[in-house]
Image 1 (cartoon, helix red, strand yellow):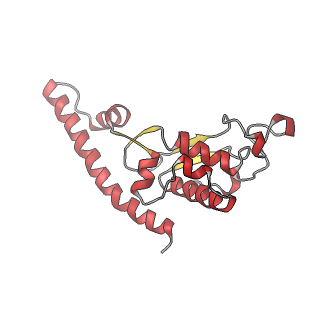
Image 2: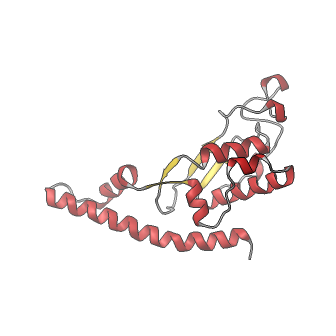
Amino acid sequence: MTTIEMMRRRLAALQEGKRQERGRRIDRLVLSARKRGEDEDRIFWSIVHDLEAAPATTNRRQLEAIGCPVPDTLAARGMGPEALRTCLWSLIHALGLIQVFLTRTDHLDDRSLLTLLLTRVLEESVPDLPLMTGVRDWIDCSDEPPSPDRGGCTAASGCDSVGGPFAREPRLPRP
C-alpha cells in the first residue's frame, strides 16, 4: 500500500468523527437558540458554526493527523535537491487529499515553494471541519516573490508572477 493510500484511509477514518462532532456542536447551537426563543433553522446554525464557532487547526496538524510527515523549516533547509523534491511533492499531494490546492506556483523553484508551504501555508489557522462536497481551499502563490538567487522567475528574466520556468502547474493535484 502506498503512502498516499495509507493517508487516504486515515483521512476517511478521521472524517466520520469530525462529522459527528460538528453535528453535536450544531445541535448545541440550535438548542441554545431554542432556549433564547430565536430561529432554530439548522442550516442557519450550520453556517454560523462553520464561519464563527468551528475549532481552529492548521494544515500542518491536519497532515500530521493523516500520517503525512511534515519537516520543520530547519530540516528542509538542509535537504538536497532530490529529498527536497520528494518532500515537496509529498506535501502537495497530501494537501490535495485534504482539499487544499495550490495554483500559480511556476515562478517558484522547489525550495522556495517548500519554504512557503512550511512557513506560511501549513501554519495558518483554518477551521477544523470535516471535508464537504464543493468546499476547497485554493492557495494562490502568485504574490509570493520568486527567489532569483535560486533560479526563480523574475521580471528581469522575462517571467511574470503567473508563469515561469518551473512548469509545475499542469502536474498539481486538482479536485
